[in-house]
Length: 380
Image 1: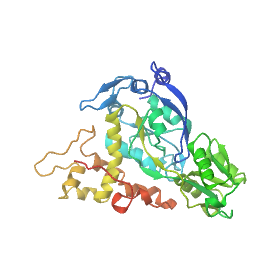
Image 2 (image 1 turned 45 degrees about the vertical axis):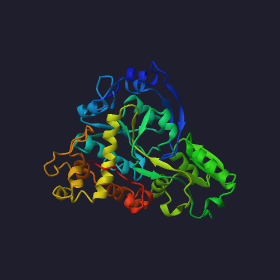
Image 3 (image 1 turned 180 degrees about the horizontal axis):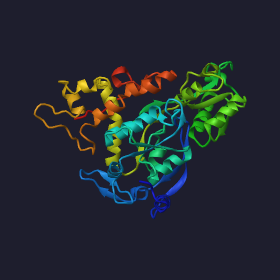
Image 4 (image 1 turned 90 degrees about the horizontal axis):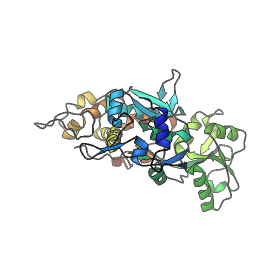
């Protein structure tokens, strides 16, 4: 369901105080964004109480977002098309990558079909406006969860699907082996983002006199980097790894220095004020983590439905003994966990499919049982 122009104007210039501004942030592509801090009514066109006390944002047609998605039979997922490993277009024009698969995870959970996704490619500056206006239902675009974005972008951030941090990439023959070597260096970053501020702050902390230059896009940074107008290229390490893999002079010509100097939890986001839709999306993401912890994979998920483990049974939508199939009231089908794993895979499978080939290690993105940060609340 496409949003009407008048509705988008109402979203952006609503009757209540809707403030437009710039809110910078460092993400998977060190992205900035316009900020729009508004109330639920401004962002969603209306508000009502859900049946279980959930807050539900109504569309201009009087539907909740969850109901609208289910009625439309597709999830409008805000993403991108040019970050290797996370979201790119393949030769046939299909979206492939880690974030692209999490769009499919949401569709599998909500609609029972991972392919019922409308991948909406968004420019950096447009992503939050697109979310607020209802042009997209959910943003899965390597976007960093920050306090300012929580407070001013009209967005609710959910379970991070990738924990990242800012780093520095240099040419392999530069002679730089650590940040402290880069005194008086020219460091290139994306314009209007906290990547720029993070780089300046790190230089101050280290007592270095970096000249930070900003560009409108990673493509322009790459051109400047190849022309030797930049000594270093700073962004999230996952993005640097992806861009390094497709660098025209070959990945071996670049080195990512070992230091990490920021926290960048990359997380899906939905519009503020709709806890029903937020819970549905959140538990779709959490299902990939829970499945890996339970040892459930695409290959064994059908076999695991016969497991005697009640945790596995509940997760896959199987009755436990004489108890009915668990329906926790999330607005999702009772077998959503099964659909997510069967059609897309568990978290480890998605990671290995797209990020391991780039050389990214699990690190903090490992399960909590393996020393990482990934931890799903109990499904019961």
